[in-house]
Amino acid sequence: MACFGHVAVGLMAGRLHDQGRPVPTDTRGRAATLIGFGVLGMLPDFDVFAVALGTSESTAAGHRGASHSLLTALALAIAGGLIARRYGWGGLRTALALMLAVGSHGLLDTLAEGGRAIPLFWPLTDHRFAAPWRCFPDAPRGFAFLSWHGFSVAALEFLYFLPITAFALWPRALARRPRLQVLDGGAERAAARLARPETAELAAIGASGPARVRDRSAGDDERSEPPSPPLRSIG
Image (tube, rainbow, N blue to C red):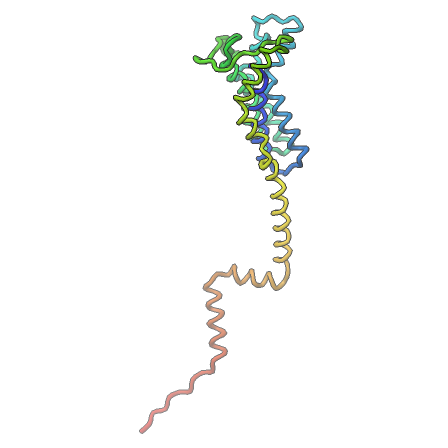
């Protein structure tokens, strides 16, 4: 596969993570979150640098090896969730977003037409898995990617994942946070109004329940009407 599919899923994971953060972030912070998770979607392919340094393709450190395992992604997700929790972010949400970004890489590679199968459950087993159907053409590696074949593969993969990319980068999703700040300002003004004496008295009357209000109104009626004189018998 080319890189567009992995980046698209990483961007979607970044958007889902950013929407669940307890503290609203600005546009720059949201963009940094999306870019960071987009890079995390490509993280398993960093094993190509180990191959370039002389690591054998047949070992677990080779390309499409241990870095593509679901258990490796799970370990990174748990570690990331624990770190995020220490800084006040949602630990579970961060772990799930990391699992989606990193763990989806190996699953998507099982759908590629060429290349080796993926050891999804390394180190428990070295067995490599491949999907029964492979719908994504495998992109050439290295400088061979800079060719007409590499460009056509990248363009086709970009079209495949265009809906996911549009979902992740849709502007309305990024503009939802400032509305929360407007609502927070309205809540502060409402709290200031409740702090006034006359407003606090009305709120206390409302909180006492309709029965007390009826008792109070009945007492006002009794005080406002004078007592009727006793009836005298005639005859």
